[in-house]
Length: 268
Image (cartoon, rainbow, N blue to C red; front, side, top):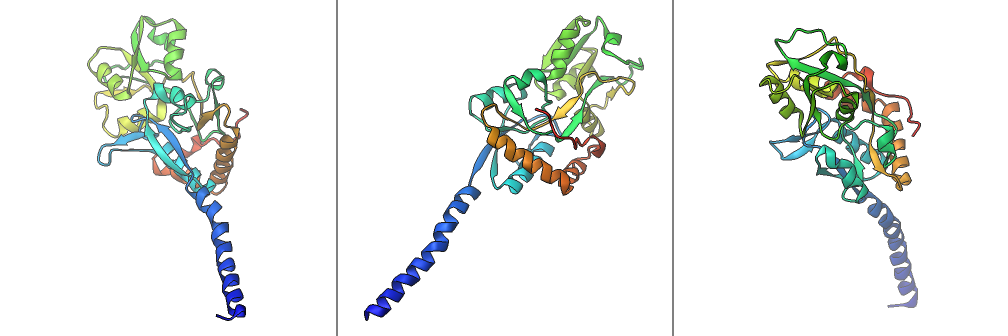
């Protein structure tokens, strides 16, 4: 082969190699995966879909949408609520995306993103209980329940007004015990209560509309304290989802009140 043709062939190979070299970092970035902790209970925020054996829900959809915006994929890890923060701090998961409210106590251990939703606790009693409860004090001396690891459980214990505060792994377990008369009432996430009661999870139960919540807060995604770069990426994605209306669409798809969409940036 003449030298001129050899030189042209080498130049062609070099030109073809350039876009491949440029594409390699992009491909590596596209393949970046974060492990996301989500609970098997807590519909519509997170729940185990028994037909697929996969964790689904509002917070899973939000995490996936953030991944699309920020160029990463997610691997959802089924994690009990009480194990979410320990799993995060020990590196078993990278992000918590569940119905977890931001609190000062939790902020001492982990970092919260800007908020995506806001709500307080609801009160559930037997359907034949017509007492117009307005506060925790109205149930003084009773046996009540809350999900273990939640801010609601901590608030009930701190109040000191109840005969006993029982802890439960799931809202369904609490609903069962109220229906059976084993406990007087349960305190839990208001949107989760409304969703489950509306879908037949508690035919013998009702939410007390006169009750005023005292533990209200923001739902955020959560990362490790030393992972500020990931927190900032998530915040950028959250800002985009709020601005383009996609976050509101996801919330509406799960039948939640869009007025509780928290559009204000977090100060933590």
